[in-house]
Length: 232
Image (tube, rainbow, N blue to C red; front, side, top):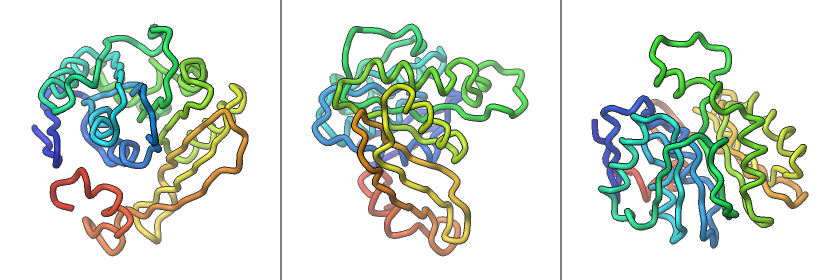
């Protein structure tokens, strides 16, 4: 199955990681500014890395532990307009250390801590945190960031709030919180978070995805994603 965006396509035929709203939101919401070096942790199909390649001129490293997903993302990068901007590495974050300081680290990590595991290992890695726990993600990312760097995460509310506490242990502070609601009458389902080493008050925002019904997207969501989706 090939998912076509305005400037690139994602082949997700064999990948255990499928394109979802979380990935699109992370790639569109994160503050790239003048980032020159970016790390995408757990790139999956390569979606976020490709979105950031479209948005800025940074050199991007993407890491993926799952062999099938790694092969799929590598192909997606090769077939994109930014093949020379993105390098992909087949390894776990715990094993990754090129001695570089990144301006931005971003991740749309697995988060189903308590759900029953499937019999397929690749699907387990897509859904569970066993291979990269939240505390490890925050700790290792803090060590890979430059002093002015940002860590961007998207999580369900409970894990998002936990990440704020874990980041403080590493001297990082949440400087931006986007509360994401499926519809105006639903509770917040996701938190998009940006962390920095500066202890400044967090900017708080709210984003509603669907305003009046299924696929009836809010103006804010349309504006955020219009440079990517073909039909927006």
